[in-house]
Amino acid sequence: TYVAEYSAPITEQERILLCNLVAREYGSDWISTYEKSKVVAVVMNRVHSESFPDTIYDVVTQPNQFSGYVVYDYYASNVTQDVQDSVDYYFAHTDEFGDYLYFEGDGTYNYFH
Image (tube, rainbow, N blue to C red):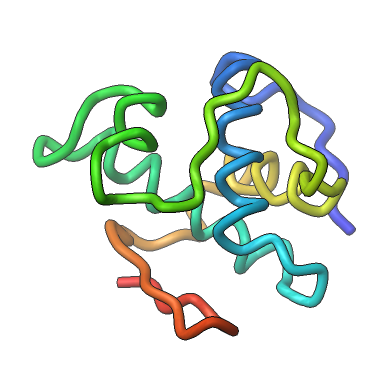
């Protein structure tokens, strides 16, 4: 299990939003931390793309994009430590992720492109 030892370049509210999103989109315990981090990569790649909104909140809440988002001021009950670790892992290892802008799932796995 990865344990973050740094501060991510996002606010605590953005971290909560990303954790809640990852938990709902890909939060199964048997999915690796790295695979969960790919959800964060999609969001952050969109933030940096001219084709999408410029903030994490606006990307995640954009209509018809992420069915799993919930806008809470707190971590939802399904946000496990591994989900939190996956968000932190992304920010500690951004160079490990491609330029994914989308993903789709089959009910078991997500496929990123």
